[in-house]
Image 1 (cartoon, rainbow, N blue to C red):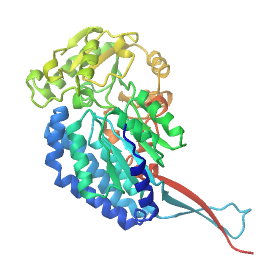
Image 2: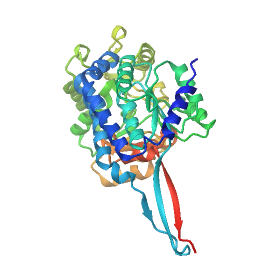
Image 3: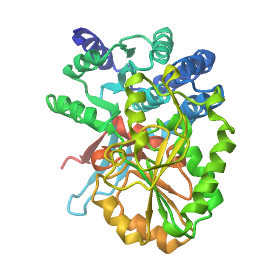
Length: 434
């Protein structure tokens, strides 16, 4: 197992020089990153095609564009974020002022997943740079083409003592976690998140954990069914369902189930064609292990739509499983694939109880025209973030912090939240001499 003590030491030494702290250095670095992404766009898209069979359109929209928007937003707001904030001082402390100084943590470790291997590696890096930190980036070994492009892109544009990319298997992540970092940012599964947090506790290192879970999607009887079908199909089957905030399962009021599922079937064909197995742009399942895990779910409930697979190219067709129960195997873990189980309900209270008895989800989606229904669900269910009458869109806004709660994670990022995540806010009281 490799030892990364020297790399961590070099970054700490570089950070202590103070070079990363000035605003201009951060701006220059963000511009360098932006230019590097634009220069390497074709290579990034080709790697995403190789690793996950993402089309150029999907790859650009879901991976590159989101990162470029993060950089743009950070550049526009960095000056305001970095300024010390004057705050009130209690009246019983006379002749004094109070100031909050944002300062970088130091050396950050960013561990990225495979499902959006470019976006979920580089987006946190934007926050680390904006915050004035050094960073070690560990891309996923399950998407080696993208990992290689990221490594070359960073190596060609930044000194290793400032930003470094370390490629490798799980042993590499384990070795990195043994080193002392000032901050750890991890995106991945809940089980691995527990391992990361345990490792961080050895050095009392603060962490952000972007995890997952079973995110419910509710379609109430008063919803606009045609709109709901299109938006749920798009959100569920993007990246072949390998999205941490994808609608994991569908809860639908009984009296509109048949009508809705018919519209959902139409929406899927509208997105991917009549014979999806012949669509060259439908993403593949990342590896054989995940393909086999997902295929085992296909005998749950009744097959309403889809269900075809091709192991030779790790293809699973968008699939709807009807007559699912809470006890079925597909309801015991996050699906993370193009399979949508459907559970019917009669009364909202019954599903609120079922949802709240389970781990808090990363995302939550409600399709209803009733403000009363919307408010009831929002007040009763705890979740990381979500949408009313839409899916996924909340994570694209720099104005909305993105993160989980409970077993779906801790901490948040995007926009100012990214800067705040990689920044310690140092409180100082200044008092005049007597």
